[in-house]
Amino acid sequence: MLNTKVTYFADEPADLFILKLARVSSDLVEHVRDSKAFLNVYEIDEPPYGKDVSKHNTVLKRVITLFSGPRYRRYFFQKLRGLTGRKTYKILFTGAFWSHTLFLFWYFRKSSPDIALRFVEEGLTNYNSPKNWQYRCMPRHGVKEALMRFFWFLPVWRAARRSIDGEYLYTPGFARTNKAPQTFTLPPISSGGVCCGVLEKLSETIDMTEYSLRQAYLVLDSIACEEYREAVIEIIRIVFEAVPDNLLVFKLHPAMTDFSINMPSDVYIDRRQYFFEAACANLDISEKVFLLRNSALSLYVKAILDQEPYIIFTYRLYPSDGVNDVNALDIFTDDLRTLYHKPGKILVPNTAEELRELLMTLMEKNRRGV
Image (cartoon, rainbow, N blue to C red):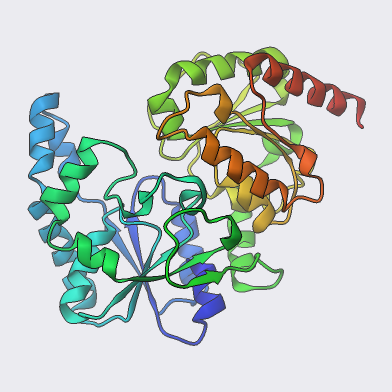
């Protein structure tokens, strides 16, 4: 969002709204505020109603959630009224319709009937997600999302879709679905720029000593751990066999709170919540190995930071379905290789045995220093 502001709207006043989820880095928010790129940086606490719902059994919890839309709407409207009054806006920038974006659009549309919606790159949502993924009220498949759309956002969802008139992407040539009427290219973060300054300040507060000393980073995403736990456990087992404990980092996604597994004591487990790409900004990762199912990190280390680590994608070791679409991920992987000077550093094992052999080869290469 910051890069979009300073690149395309440097001289125009703009406000930034942040939903204070637990995984949002408070340091990042403060550094963005200090950059003075935005006129105001508004923080909105997450609605407290989820805690009330969690006390009930599953069926009752679902019923309460289904009919909680008006309560959430009143909460956001009251917060926005207190922060902005009847201030008008021309464009609302967001990553997707989820994270309560539609409540903001709904409120601002009252005072700004012609407000436009524009997407700003949200991880890999623009590149290899299922069709119409950005238009979902929550990043999930199934009946629950459809019911939420109907009961929570029926008066505004279609208006929001009609209001989309542009998107901002780092690699627009990779976008395969849901292309907006206008597409704008975001530049890499350049030395001395506003974004670079924010990353540098943020990186100063993150201790990356263990990352510099270790060789392989297993980065787990929350969707994989929710949908394919058995496959995740098998991949972890293979990694433990192939990578020495003292060379392994186990990085959990900031949204993961309850995933647990027995770990050897020498494995470094990183549960901290911070902007990982910022931590990599001052770290030479050119010979490091990232193990990912499907993560924006694979794109951003190159498109934003211009570094080329080894990337091992594990998505072929998971079931192929609407969440883990192997064909779409293969296309994205081929696209990603076109960015690399050494495309052979992006690897996709077809079997668990191939993953084991790749890891052992790269660990031996590291041991020999070649």
